[in-house]
Amino acid sequence: MPIVKTKKAISHLKAGEVIEVQATDQGSTADIKAWSESTGHQYIGTVENGDVLKHYIRVASEAEKKDETKHDNVVDVNELRAKVEGDEAVSILDVREPAEFAFGHIPGAINIPLGELETRIDALNKQDGLYVICRTGSRSDLAAQKLTEQGFKNVINVVPGMTKWEGPLNHDN
Image 1: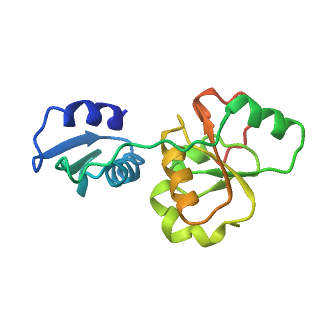
Image 2: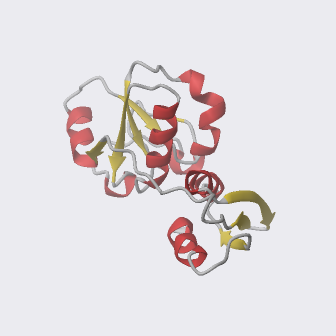
């Protein structure tokens, strides 16, 4: 949700202005940072104030802006479910935060939060087909783009994500 609201609010600001985005979701830091980088806006940082995260973004000039892109290799969550329930060998990367992952994840999924992906990318095999999932498909889209940029050959974004997953779940809590 923070990204959707930020996109709308930022469109009314001038280049160089700074917007403060408040959120309570710990995963919003990685989301805001990745979205900012992908659109040319400058992620300045995040300040924690109790349970509230205050994210600061400097609005890009027209020359700095990038067109927002989407990863083009996409699969519906039900197609992934059929593979999992059919006992197909699939590699699944869940880029949600550890707390989200603990409350329910696809059996066998690897959890690397979006914000840690760049530092933990070596834990993944560039040659494997990799299904990337998050809560709604937004973080996984950004992760899929990053992985592809890093030379991963077969990266698939799963949409609309865990919000619509009706297959088997493991819980760590």
